[in-house]
Picture 1: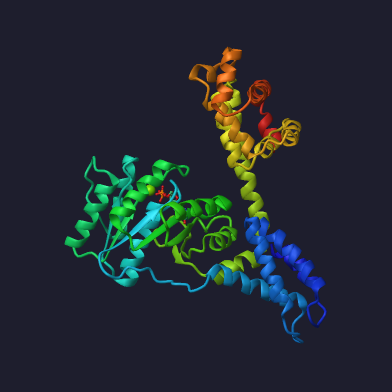
Picture 2: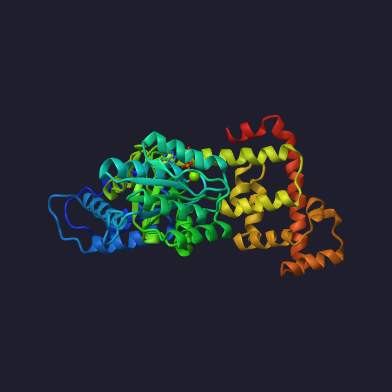
Length: 441
Ligand code: GDP
Ligand code: MG
């Protein structure tokens, strides 16, 4: 990022006041740079707008160049947005035992962060903390927390098999009161994606536990996705703060900026590694410096993206190699495409599929279209999904009606499936000869 900005700001070396032209030139680059750092588009746009206004109002300074002035304004505004108004760095954990609810998707780092935070409260504030795992879905999850608890010297609620998350939450609160604990931390189960079941479970726990703090743990590497997750959790459950994990990763600060701007919730802590002491308070200046100043931020982001894309492609290739591609596979692909930002984006990544990607793009295959296609597949029977050739005219009508669409829509879907199955079959064969490796280098 700084390379890009450095170039622009470097050019603004003459002395004197900022002209509108200076500002416009510099901020165009700032906007692109923010987007490259995975800041969401509306956030980047707003950010540039407010910086423009502030830059226009700048007094003439003799000692610095216009370029330096813009950097300063951009930096200050970054800090301003990241810090938010009326920041409250302290967790509300007076009035013992104070329940702290940890929520988030599976793998975001909830359990790890629960233990890290418990250790921190114990070591720095001398709090007596009780941790409880409400993750009844994965048997190993409760043990994981117990092991971490032993490691950091924090008590965990004894495991009683067969209890619901709400029952465990109640037991934890009871135990915390009886045992004279200051804080009771509730580590909930996650899911791979937001779903109703998850939200209902977390809501029920919230109602039972009445948490003083509800901290959303999100993977800082998931960028824009992290912001969507935060919005949804806040909408359903209500969160009081955010913990961004894996900030030891590829160096993006963009998620932090979007998160702060979009949800308005304070980022309380930042996870900086797997070790139990790798949890820091959130320092807006540090992240701002990172967004602005890390010379190789762009290349780091690029590298991460490449890795992700290669992994995705490899997973797809494994499916092709089986030579199978029925409607269930297609549905899986469609869902993934929605997640990955559209079909054309995904197909464009595949060797030999760029042309198809362009066609799809031209056919207007956007998210809405993808969702309609999924609805069509959902209205088919299991048998039909495995073998769409079975579909007779009468069934086609029913399926289309079931999805609220026309038979022609269904025919288009079937045609697309045939085309894709064809391509996949061919590519499956080629894949065995290492086309993927060659293709993606
Ligand atoms: P949960 O499913 O949300 O409870 O996630 P876990 O706490 O089990 O964490 C999943 C994985 O992420 C574990 O291997 C953690 O060690 C790792 N992890 C959690 N936080 C961080 C972090 O800040 N940085 C890094 N590098 N890894 C982390
Ligand atoms: Mg967990």
